[in-house]
Image (cartoon, rainbow, N blue to C red):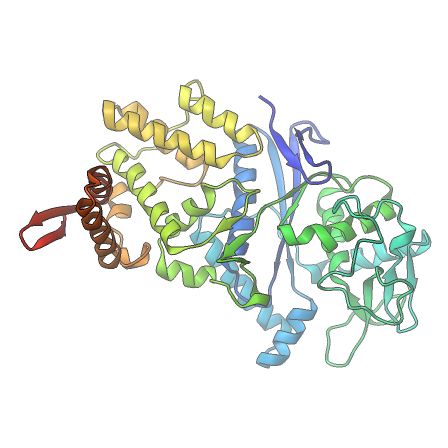
Length: 458
């Protein structure tokens, strides 16, 4: 089967047809390294980790590029706040990012370009835009992109020019010829990093980075360009204008955007102050629980982060690992002729439907429990491995410190016991039995007595 995926640009699912047969070039907008990464970032990077894993599983060669922004307004402000050198601040956060993503099993990209390494390419690109009449030197010394001179502007976000407004990182300046114009090169200011250019010393605008780095590392037309939902406009819209305005060819054939991770009613965002950093999350939850929580939902859908959902994710992993108890953990390959593997592959081929793929893991776990088949257990572990799951020894996962899993076990068990007691009093014995069975799967035994219900570990 061909791999099909949703294209934000065309608003439909289409077949992936690489520019170079058998070789997928993918660029994903990475981190602005002024702070630690949070779980919303983890969702983004895990989504594309799964994409590149599946494409490789399908026998395609993948060149995966994920950039690092190491010069930016936010970085400069944070360095001034902390009194650090910008390079020290970004290096510290890059190290932390690698440690956190490694812990979640997110594989590193093939190429990880940093903005400060591609200043020359950015300046060359700005020069091409100026010669084509798409860029101009404003009165304040900045070089701006003339949005209304690029006919296709707005095609990614689907809005007309009159509907569009300046985005989060665009400062509305009097020197602009049009409020929608955006900066390509910022003139030098005191105490800010700067590089020489034909327009005077300065530093790049945010959007020009990715256009330059994508072209330098992957070519002028790539197969997949990805990012978070907040990048559709203005960042990706501006990338298209810059790259296609300069080179006259499509920047990317397919644009992919993952859904937001929400905390309550709001998107998890540093600007809203409602973030849980990956580092803090790893102190509270097992890394594989976090990975499974993020993987089991389709990448394009919005997700909510709650303790109950994390508890449910761990319960699901407990079921899968319990099925693998007692079976050899040796390396195995997926039998792609198996029924579950065929359905797993069909789900992944259709826009990376990890929710349906995970359902096949649970189906296989049920088969292992019924048949005690070593072959079924091997297939379960192998398919889990495609998603970066189920590679631990079962006992290592099942006996992990519960305080780092979800809610403290004692608190959660007491909550479930109270719910079970309420269910029994209401003569809802099916619900009471369901709770008993759920806890039994997690290694918790309930004992009913005259004084009420007590519990203990198996």
